[in-house]
Image (cartoon, rainbow, N blue to C red; front, side, top):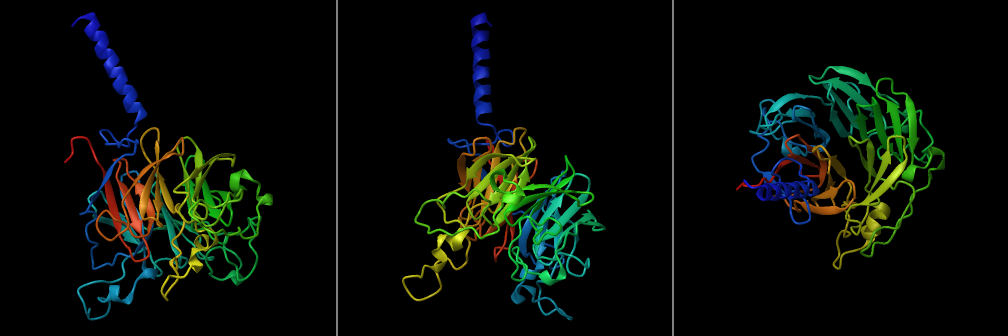
Length: 419
C-alpha cells in the first residue's frame, strides 16, 4: 500500500469516527434516523403470560436492575371485577386472580421474585407509585397516599427499613398533597404528604423526593433532611404556597413560571450528576446540579395542553353535541416518566407522554427533541397511558401502562443489517 493510499484510508476512518461520535448510539449498530433519533421496534412476544392465573394490572412503576431484570408494580387497587372472575372456591373461571404487587421479570419475560400486597406488610403502600431496584440487592417501593412512605426490602421481600416522615393522623390518606383542607406548605420538612415520586442516588446515599413545588433531599440510611429547593433553584423559603394560575390553551405553550408547576412526575439523576425534574403541569423538565443550582429548562412537546389549569381550560370545553367534556379524562401534560439512556455519554432522554401516547427522544445535552416512537392505540407498539419506563444495558426500552392499558411492552433497538 502506498503512503498516499494509507493516508487516505486513515482520513476516511477518522471521518467515519467523527460521524459515529456525532450520531452516538444507545448500543452498537443502532440505527438512527436523519435527525439523530435512535429507532425502536416492539417485541410483541414479551413478556410471557403471568403464571398462576395472575392478572396484569396498572404498571405504575418500573425499574431495571444491574442484571437487566425488570421489576414492576402491579397495582391491584385498579382491578375490575371482570378481571378477577377466577377468584373463589371452587374457582368459577379459567382466569384471573389477584397477583403479587411487585414482580420481577428476566430477559426472557419469565417471572422471578414476586411478592407484595396489602397482606404482605402492615404499611404496604395503598397507592403504589415507584419501585427502584438498586445495585446492592435492595428494592425500594413507595406510594402516593398521605400515610404511604418509602419502604426498603431485600430482593426476596424481607423488610429492611421504613423512611416514615408520615404526616399527622388527621391528614388521613388523601392523595395529591392534600391534608384535609389545610393550605399547602412547601416549607414543612418534618413530614411529607406525598412521598410517592422519589429517586435513589446511590453515589451520595441520598433520597430525592418531589412533593408540592419542591425537591427534598434526605439521607438514605437515616432519613434525615439534608437540603431542598424549588423551581429554578429558589430556596424553600421563597416557594409560593398558592396554586399556580391556570391558562387558556390556544395552541401554544403555557405561560412561563419560575416555580415548579405541579404535578411533578419524576426525578432522575445522570452519571455526570445532573438532576432532572419533570413538570407535567408545564410540559417541562428542569435540570439542576445535585446542590440545587438551576442549569437548564427542557420543553417536551410544549404546544400540547399542559396539566396546568385543567388542561389549559379544555376540561370545561363542551363537545358540539351533548355529552361529557372534551378532555374529561384530564390526561394532559407531556412529562409523565423518563429514563436516561445507558450509553457511556447518556446521550438521550426517553420521556413517556401519556397525553400523546408516545415516547419522546430528547438529546440530553442540548434539550432538543429528536423524534418519538409509538402512537395511541391498543395494538402491539401502540400505547395507552404510558406511566412507567425503564431501559436495560442492551438498549431495550420497557414501557408500562396504567388506566386500563395494564401491560408492559418491550421496544428493542433497530440494528443495522436487521430484518
